[in-house]
Length: 316
Image (cartoon, rainbow, N blue to C red; front, side, top):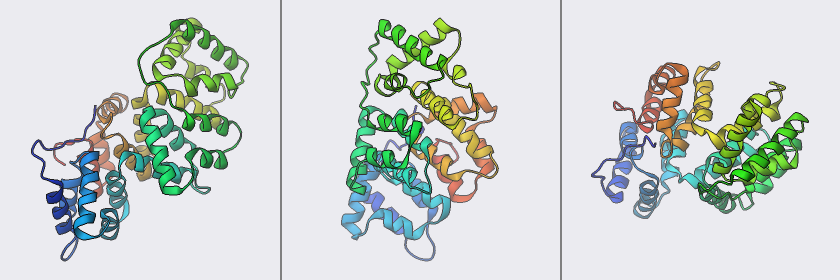
């Protein structure tokens, strides 16, 4: 499912650190060398490279990259070089800032990570920002958004595949009743979506579809312009079919008025080691063009080469 390609014979972390240090020397930066190293190392390898670099050269690799690089290429390299937990903590913090509030990013992190990965992100958030993710989400949201997002980021779901079909039938009926009453933020509806395992939610929503004749997201389109309902539908998609959500984020990032580099970078750097292959397949199916071709047509230079390398493009 991942698209990250790591060489079978990988140099040692010390050798990689030395190569990166060389890339920063002399006139100009050797961006191609940076891509050839960092875009082809997994999270554990990148973490070790950072540690060795710091020990050897007395400087944080992230600070060195920040000094040498710029623009969208810099952002993509810095985000990628972070550990997944550090990256999620950073993205979540950016999303909670008063002037950059993005409920969608918070929902995405809460709904598409495993329980352990979400817990690790919250630990990283606590360590870096000296407060909890939950308190920041609660402070920077309100109303129905707060009712949904706080329990989403607070949860520790069961990650196994066991399913209780009787419970699925019962809770499908509860969800149907609340939707019929247009009570979209009812505590029972939110409880089910924010505490049940993803396997259990899938079973419940499959039963919903079979019993009531419509997929739940169709019934949640009563008001297509309602921002809370948009977020609720996206949360359900992330819990049940994340590649569909990410393919849509990429399509909007690439095909909108001007490229949304932040959205494009976020998806590529967070999913390259997870399920980018499925996202690429979904993107192609929905848009009749490959993601590689779409990125190549909408970006350029080192930024383009970095993204293409992360999504497994052979010529990157």
